[in-house]
Image 1 (tube, rainbow, N blue to C red):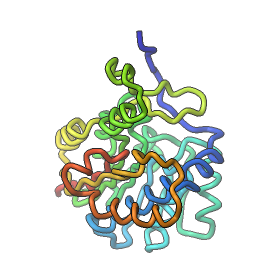
Image 2 (cartoon, rainbow, N blue to C red):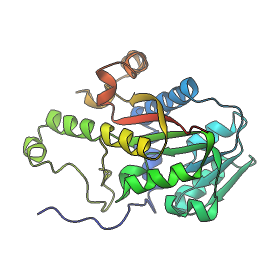
Image 3 (cartoon, rainbow, N blue to C red):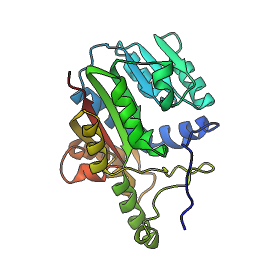
Length: 256
């Protein structure tokens, strides 16, 4: 019987691991490049105030701050938030060591622009999180939402030869130690339905890393990466490739 997970996963004490194993790796560089491009191409950026929920090390908040947005960061992990403070030193930024559920109390909306990237898959109730985010959005506001894609997790396990794991549908992680398999990987149809039920409109969907994570070569050279990045940008919003992105990004609008 699968172990029952009863608490959300936070990442206290793992800032260094994220910095070295993700963002100093090609997958992290590609994730940031595709994510920022998806936002720029589908969400109006006018310097409006932004809240970044689950801000991690602060890369996306820094990117937005450099484009004139005053930023508010919520991040439950102390060392992650410390790294974000250092990254945004001297900028128009506020920092709260709190989780997503604390948003209405700590930094209530209405927010004209919200970021929530790679957070929902670490919660035991991601649908409730979508409802909370929707309640904090301003009319005519935007949400940049990125989630871990269950279909990609299934496909990558087949590629790796973990066939029985897939047949048993035992894909989710347990939220223990330093392993980074999400406890609640998400399906595209569920995410779209939950957003629509919350009164929101999905204006664009982008696959983040639709090829990279399936390469046989774990550490491709720079010439290969350059061609790969070009392919990722070319196909990240085309059928059927976007559906196998390791993450799915949604540009979400709240009608007035």
